[in-house]
Amino acid sequence: MWTAIRDAHAWDDALRALSWPHLLQSWAWGEFKSRWGWSVERWLLCAPDGAPRAALQVLKRRLGRSPFCVLYAPKGPACADEQAFLAALDWLATRARAQRALWVKMDGDPHLAHAPAKRSESLARYRALLRQHGWRYSPSQVQFRNTAHTDLQRSDEALLASMKPKTRYNIRLAERRGVSVRLVTPIKGADADLLYAMYAETAQRDGFLIRPPAYYLDAWRVLGGVAFIAYHEGCALAGLILLCFADRAWYFYGMSRAVGREHMPNYLLQWSALRWARDQGYRIYDWWGAPEVAAPEDRLWGVYRFKEGFGAQLVEGLGAWDFAPYPVLYTLYNRIGPRLIRAGWAG
Image (cartoon, rainbow, N blue to C red; front, top):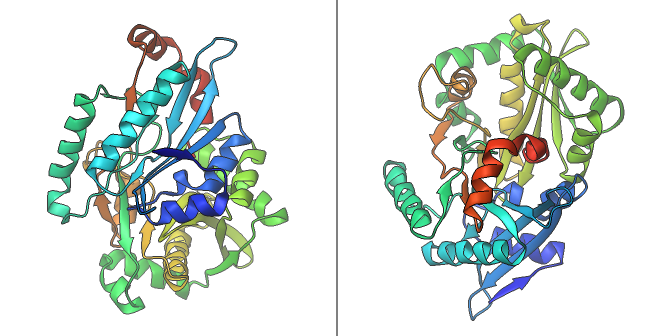
């Protein structure tokens, strides 16, 4: 039986008890998104002995003045096994029908306790199950489908040994040139303004859109962001922000200036963040985003090569899937509607 959860500690404790709990299913993420146009519901499925079987945090947004809404379970559901995953799919479909949702979207990765070589085979099975239950691969992939992980349960020497020689060289080069890294927590005041200014400069240089400062300041506050800022001779050159939950630290935001890049500040930043996350007890450093196809023509290839230099391993994901109670309206919406709300979804 599914139960609505309204207590933060109960929710996060249940989520941590499941496989691969994601930051975007955490209570704090739901609270943050509820301040930016979404309403939130949280559902938990337990075994007879009370052990969590599946958890679903679902965001809801009305479509203007229409009677319809859209539902989204970001990086959900979190599940104990395949049967719990199927139960979560059925519950999402039930909620979609009950709330007159044009569609409900999920993009979480199921429990995959397999060797990496078998991951693609397991994902293929889950995708087949989704199709059998009336779900379709979404034309709107809100989050990154793939990511990359670094195993943090190693010494400094072992972490360095897992990196590419050029990466190790650039870390040492940054140190020799006098780059320093400062930890910032909590992120507020002048530090927050500096990080946003560098993020805006990065966005303009690399050609991507960002939200107003208030959005990021709120995210960093509600989610307990931890920042690292790299300096050279008193000048801030680059920064990054980690968001952490359960056993993972996510490299969620990165920013840099055009000046000082020859000093390799980003390499020392990542090295500092990796060691900090390990020392705080996190097992996995999640690099938050990797190419759809591991090839130079992918738009994320250059960024991934940087991450790969630190020993990051590509992790294939399930991708976003939609269940549509009203197929005709769903088709119409996908032709004209995504631009109306896309800005409110992703991190």
